[in-house]
Length: 233
Image (spheres, rainbow, N blue to C red):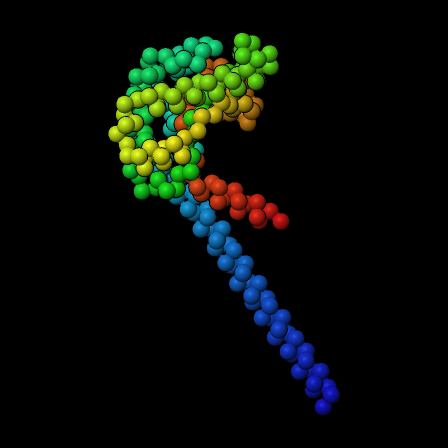
């Protein structure tokens, strides 16, 4: 009789372990499914926004010398159109481009069904590696100041445009919530193929590196980043 009780205890123990393993498996499956949902939402949002921007600006990219990246960047590539060397003043031709580009760009994003997924729109100023001692003895700091001023010039010009007045108070508040001006110096300089020179290990293309970009950051990026941090351990 004593032996029977032992076997019953072992049987109960094995049953308990199986139940524990079952809960662990369910939790793991749920975690994997959550991963897939986060990744799917992130990819689908970026892909849909990219495709819409490509479609809306397909007649403008060539004449503005603008490239639309998979990272949701709108890159203006012609440095001679943007600013004079060492200057943060907008060139007349760039003002003409912005007069067309900015209202169209924000009309798309304000009216789009994915507007709730947009967390930030960055106006990025980028420079080449040429020193600018009038701003600072340190070339990187000097170009940070210059690129920041250029980004601010674009932002200031947008806020002075009559077109911004057509938006409702709510929409203007949303645009102000989205917009940031960022001076990135030559930290993300480009090579002759338009790739980051740091990553490609190719020589910097001075002309391509002097540029302005508009970049959309989606809420999915923050979710994805937080998810990765939580699941590192």
